Length: 213
Image (cartoon, one colour):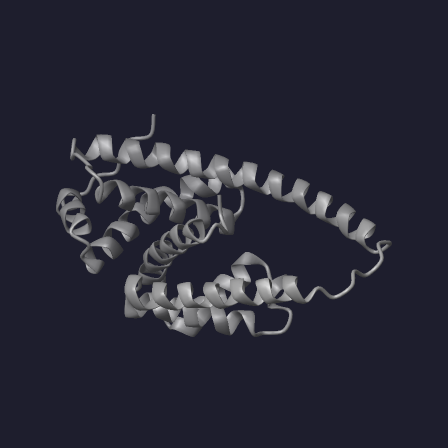
């Protein structure tokens, strides 16, 4: 059985992370990364998938810290994180399988669409679409102004810059991550925790807007 890593400062880091202190979150992220990123790599067999699964597990732990987490000692904490990480790695593997299946279905639909006649322009449908887009832009602006920190708004700017690069939608995930880190000029120890928090807020927004179920 893998011996739990030892850290005399872990309980203190947990308290600082619970309070939302950024340096505490970054140090906790670094500590967990040093001890568990290798496990994620063994489970996924892919460096980018391992990093993503680790980030998802860290985000889940941060959520627990803000919602009634009870300290029960180092061994229990590390055991809990290891379980969360294994679950996220399995989720990533299942997600890749679902993505491949979805792509097959989409490709089949696209082939079918090529034979269908072009529909006449519908002014009412066009007006409805414009209203939805206007509402979406307003909600995103409200979200950025009221729910995001300055640093998180920078993430939004980085994503906008990425989307404007021709062909970037065909980039591999690790290439997109490299661009974001370079654009924001952030070290990894600060980038990944901040990115995880921003992704968590975006998921909440997407669910509120009905874009994600």
